[in-house]
Image 1 (cartoon, rainbow, N blue to C red):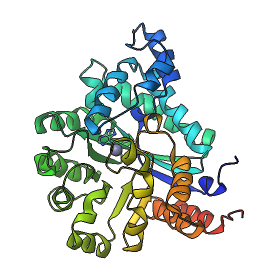
Image 2 (cartoon, rainbow, N blue to C red):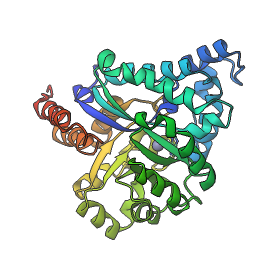
Image 3 (cartoon, protein in one colour):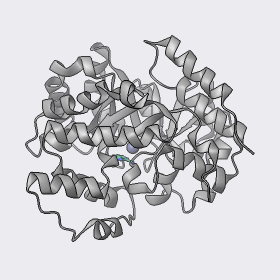
Image 4 (spheres, rainbow, N blue to C red):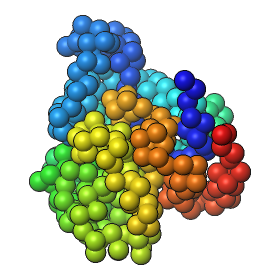
Length: 337
Ligand code: ADE
Ligand code: ZN
């Protein structure tokens, strides 16, 4: 069957963990290059392990597999592989998360991580036609002190970093724990986002807005449990970077057919759809557009709205002419029947 052509509408990807794009084939190739033995016989055995019960069961495998990423060249190859796949799915702009603490704790220098990713990103427009931004995430299940040390260590590389984010195990690690590092990031001129309301309660969404001053909420799925919060998110045009395939794989929703995305859009929320960790969750962002079309019946105009929202919500304030060009591409896109 030919993929639905709406899958390749021009779009921005705003919620993408670069480490979550590590495909089994690349993981084994890097393991061989770096002399690392993986606890899986082959790529098929690794793929069979992609059956998750919740966020934590995914994170255990996700952090474990990062052992193969050791050098600047490894990070450059990882990012270039993602950009190649993203370009084939209509991505024109990507705001990419990375998790420095997960590498520094294994003895990999933050410079190797950022310069490796930066090497691929520098070539992205020319090679793939994709503009990029980099967002450095703090692991919320690590200490506030560790987040502050990470921001300090990143200071020589701030010219490569647009913003900070907050990810990893959510429940029990409320946003307010990171007030100080977000204040410091704001003083450095960095944009602010945070995962909230993926597994954690709606109150974490409000707290991320009130205490951390975030401009976008990553996931935000559980806002639907609090009508006043929905009203606020609609009124203040706070973008949500939803990840429907991730929500199914991590059991935040039972079936894609049950995903609240259509109701969220109907409520007036500024929704975007994204892939989160596409190597693990069964698809890149074009596949996600295809899946929500099939499972949720979102037609061409809803998909166009999602694509438009992705550029409206992107951190392109330093290049409004580019944003306008991308938005014009969205409006000009013709869906086939
Ligand atoms: N890190 C990578 N993927 C994540 C997710 N879906 N939620 C929280 N942290 C993550
Ligand atoms: Zn995420």
